[in-house]
Image (tube, rainbow, N blue to C red; front, top):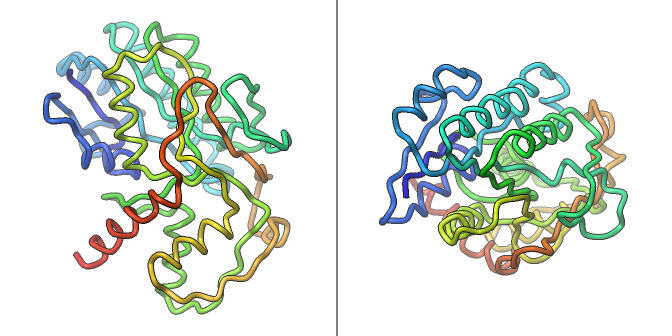
Length: 286
């Protein structure tokens, strides 16, 4: 199988590199080799390589960054995805597109499944949901994998939650205030990459899927577990999401925990965190 990865230096793209299957041919594309906002470049590259599957991991992420740069957020998360979907349809290529639990409003009071309607609250969620709808409406052969909050090492300079917390700790901060009322399902990028490849190669029925490690945690529990397993003594104090409202330009859903009623969940996130800590320490040494 020929597989082309868009966004290959991000948190999931890097995981695909680490977990590539030897029997397949891969094309790893980042900003320097393929700009997702350039329709002509994408068409030329896909026509040249003719992959069986394109896996799109590229996204403009973050509630505040997307609020501040709405045009860019929609350009990457929606318009470029529309173009990619049209190209894949034209060339008869299967598109596997990665989405987010941020498409939900957090009001359900229970796990969101593939049957729940999306109701994004902010530009990030709205732009990602728009991209999902383009894939569903345009592609004949597609997968949409909704993912929760992630942990994993990457090639590029990321700024997701667990990375932010570690940077603060590394900078000498001795006390962290972290929300204990914001919930998601922490998941290891390497586990997700391996499972996506397995499901695609197993010819899973096309459609929308929620993919995650087993379990649920608040941001407080997530960070506390990470630092404990890392062996760092950090004073972490409980806070509420409203305590940080000053820094937020748009509302954030409090509980976007997802589960799948279509596929099996992966191992518990705390178990996966053990492998991540080893990976993280090795990267720090290098």
